[in-house]
Length: 268
Image (cartoon, rainbow, N blue to C red; front, side, top):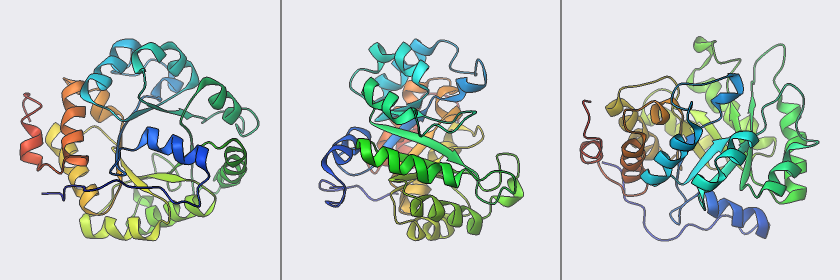
């Protein structure tokens, strides 16, 4: 069973007022977050997100803390998202530091995101992350980095050591919080969390069974992660609202996997 969070969590006083306030729109009072990654439309019509409005309504009904989305998706679904947190994905064919942060600020977003690829001999995007971090700092906009060692398909490169190094490089480049793969077991992933000086959240990765997705969230929290960022494991679930509610019970409520799984009411 995961430990139940207690007491309010305050982001460092060294973080200026505006980004600190926006971080509180993304994380709960316990300093933890359940975030739905809904930015897959950058590649076309993704499973689970064909009806953008229904998809956002479902995760909001489940109690989501925030969503990660493209600016177009966010604009289209602003009415459904309401006061929930929003991170705008700035992954693009061209460097986004020159336009993306201001666009996100004007829209009223609470954070921005960039994927980077440490260890990729062709492009790491770490330089772009440093530039984006400086721009985000000027605008008071929190920045989330998603480091993928080498690339999405280079699974053998996604070792505990490489994920830890990638997370650390992202924090060193100026990311305010980091979304990283859960690798290894609880003890091994705790070394990834401990080596990252910025708050770290675990990403969901490939589609899992509902129970496996909940177990990974519980393991990540036990290892010291501040929460999860799930895409397919939420939006492609039979009941995305119930999957979110179950994750919220684990991440914020300290519930066991067995107790949280009862909320799904679907075959595990």
